[in-house]
Length: 80
Image (cartoon, rainbow, N blue to C red; front, side):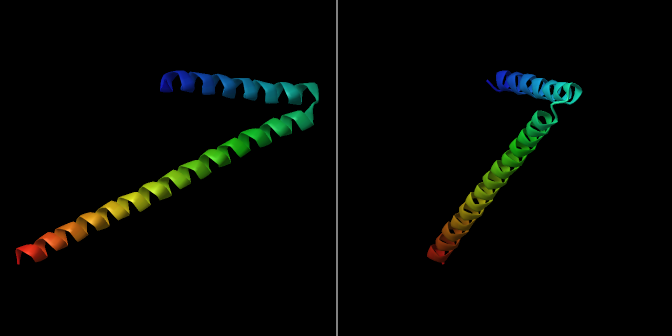
């Protein structure tokens, strides 16, 4: 599935890039700048999604580590 999605994304990227070049060549500057804005917006969105996923992972990892430490501390106290 990832392989298919990558091919689709590469194909769309090439089409958008060709569209930007064509719009500049034909004099449709507003459309070209609109496509550039669209690409930049998508990249910013992907960056925000990655940042949120990283924050969630860091929180979950810290919580799991904290719980393991609490369990180990409780087990050590029971053994003493």
